[in-house]
Amino acid sequence: MLRLRRYALKLEFKPGKYLIGTDTLSRAFDRSVKKSNTEEEIKAHVDMIKQNAQVSDPMWEKIATHTKDDEELKDVLNAVHFGWESDHAQSLKPYYHFRGDITEIDGVLVKGPKVIIPKALHGDMLKKIHEGHLGIEKCQARARQVMYWPNSNNDIENHIGRCGTCQKHRYKQAKEPMEQHEVPEKP
Ligand SMILES: [Zn+2]
Image (tube, rainbow, N blue to C red; front, side, top):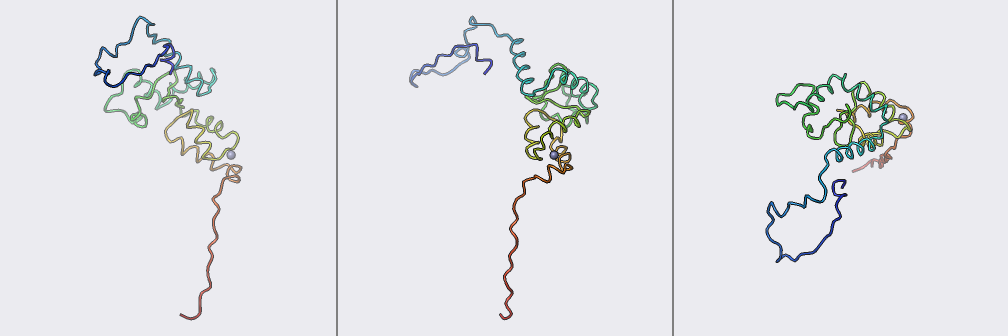
């Protein structure tokens, strides 16, 4: 959407009989309109991710600091910059299958629009997710939109499973009591 915004599109209907087979040149757009500005696009992308994650600048820096000290993430950071080797290290395993989605923004690793949280900050994030005591499912859904770490769903479940308030107000599926009929005395 951001890429297309600079163009004023004009749609025109062409009957099928006037359509010729598409070839490379038919897709060559007019380059005189405006040169593609990769830097501008990257900045828009970065802003979009930062906005989605709702992470303040000091927090972003904190995540970056812990990322480069993190046992796993420092290897991921290295792989993002210098390539994912096929005989990848154990630390890269949880990230390898979606390696194409991982990029680095100002020292922080992101997976698509989500911020990858280093281990040292999992506790802080769990506390943040748990604010408001929304219960396990809602907390997981909330976290899934903005952050990522391997097995985060389990961690959220364990963390919130220990919370009395969440347990007390958990939605319970009403159980139908078993109704037994009287056992006849004769066949
Ligand atoms: Zn709770």
